[in-house]
Image 1: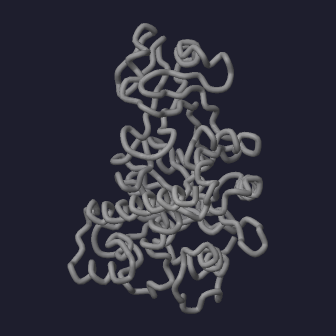
Image 2: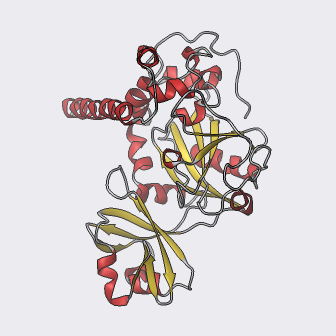
Image 3: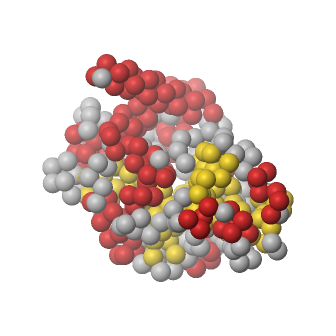
Length: 366
């Protein structure tokens, strides 16, 4: 059993290294050869190197990409599956926090009900919903294929990609979805709609369990906002924005698009709607912080998780967890390793094996 476990770990390790190389090759940015070589010598992807200011600050204070891609995936150990599998994730999260109900599981193009027996009939679940009701299909685990799709009930049919599927055509609706879960759509708060209404604008909050005290803390948070290029998603790789969040008071800071040339171009408003971003207060922020801390505390197998959530006017909805969250999305606003709790966490779990100058001197608010 020990040998099989070791072989599996090696196989996973090779996959994560492959991901690192793939992302470097896919990066569309303009990077000079000298900058690319400097990035690699510091364990960074070219994109991270530019996002972190190309050496204008001490790059040793940043968790680098080799550490993130190759080592952080193993931090949660046996708890990894609880985060990666959205069916399991829903079961462990639902008793502690609001999370969208899973109505069905589409496996190899066929509908399988989940939860209530009333979900056994997709006609009742989907076509029986009031006009305008929306649903989301997401990959249950992993990546590849079609990651996400949005459906809407309209005039006795279901709309997907502009095509209407009637009662006799639902079997055809699932074609192309190999391992997806169906949930109800969550409506975002008025603050997010005011900034960009054509996408669901989500938060990513990184929480960790302190290895000494066992207490959970929030290490960093960002808010994503969509643009016309990314809509209906807020995906920054497709043109969306990242925005820093002040953990201590729950207000938005600077926003920035993906760096593809030069240095990060920070801004205080949305580039298309003109709505102010910097200074906007997030609704129900104390409740959100309390929910995330309590939820993570209730999951003892989980050491680190990147929570994706939608903030409604009456509080947070937990959408999913990420076993080894991207780190650049936080560090574009400043290095994580200046927080002694974060530095201690990664060193304890074997992610960080090098000296960090001035480690433990300062901490992020929150």
